Image (tube, rainbow, N blue to C red; front, side, top):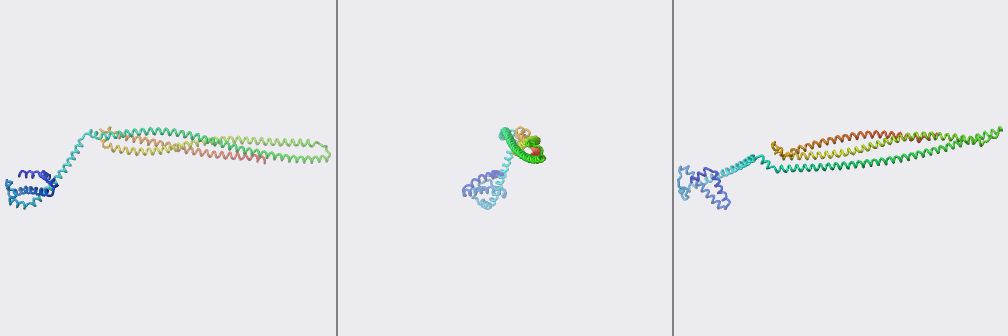
Length: 430
């Protein structure tokens, strides 16, 4: 019995665990069982504690456990009843302390287990780390390979679309040129028809003016003949008064008429010749001016077509620039996202120089940055080309404005020539 008490006092933790393990399952039973167990455990603890108390108070304890712990002994009953409450209180305190120690030890065991796991993880070799993360690396490599293949496929499709676009643009430009040439031919034909109609009207007006002039000259000639006939008659009367001979008046009148007709015919011929010479000069001047005007108009049309082509190219360049800017922005966003993703995924494994060759995403990120730089350079080149096209457009606008002013001056000059040409018969009549 003393050996058992020394064992429990020497290792209280083990004694508390044994008592707790023996005591805990029985608490889940019936209330009577729990009371019985509690009473027995109380008696046991009472006996043990009492033995210790007797040893301390009375100096010696009898070796015979039967005589000491016999419940029929009156001395033992008195002492048990006297110290029962104090012993129960002490036992409860000891039991609570044992439970706290058990919890503390369990917490320390958990901490020790965590430290052991951390030490095991730290003690793992880099090869085991590489083997552990090899599936993720393979997935990343496969993803990069798939992205590269998709990129090449997209580049090939983009090149094909560019070739188709260039072919369609060439066809469109050819059709536009053919249409502009046809429209120019129609305009030239309309202008020639209008010029022919105006020339016809002018010739009709000239013929009418010549007819009126001929009638006027005939009337004047008849008036002159009537006056001359009257004068001849007066001269005949005076000749009869002075008894001259009887000349042939009819012959004289015929001669006078012939002379007058000859003078009138010569005057008409001279007037017609002068008019024809002046008309030929004006016609030559009009033809030369018309040729110059036609050449100027053709040059203006060519410049206008050139301007339209440059405008179309400028619009295409603007559209291409907007598309490239949008594509560049999308590429920047996508590359930045991929770069962040690769850096986050591969940042833990690239700290050592030993494993830099295992992770290709960093090289891919550099390649993506280089492609982004090349795209920016291409964009700056397109911007310079667009600026050159704008400068060419401004120069063509200035040239077209100068040609327009020149054309307006030529048209005003032609209008003044036509006005003087139409007014010439009136001046001749005066």
